[in-house]
Length: 147
View 1: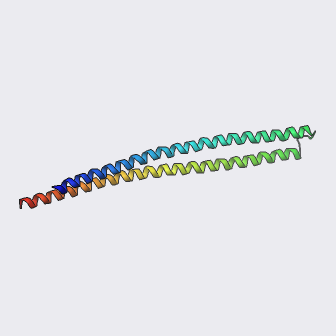
View 2: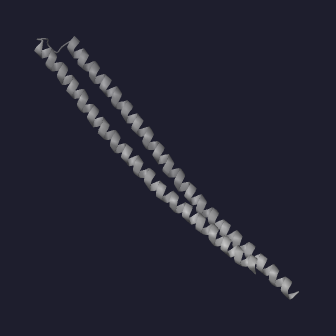
View 3: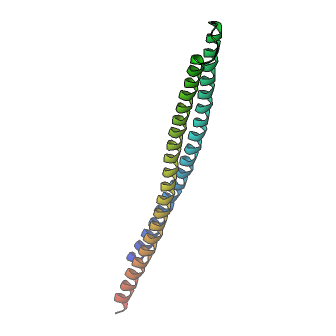
């Protein structure tokens, strides 16, 4: 009889452990997804600031050339075009870094979700196994009492 009670208690413990691990994984999944969105927003903000800096630099170059009496053609124009090109290259790098970091958080979210489902199934299987083990033990005890 005690084997049966122990089996049922073990079954409940396995189920609850799986449920708790599943709930933790769901919570972590939400955090990881929020982190991914935060990275995307941060990347867009960094791109905005970078774009402003590039425009400001080109504007300063234009003003300096104009103040020096240089027309913005040929060499000065090439300098400003090079500045714009370097700015675009850095913008692509910022976007790439943001995309990579967001993908890392997305992968963590997916892995956490998967681990939570596995933990929940393992808890269910442990509960079923414990219940059957306890029932078998209880049945064996009852059989030996009436033998």
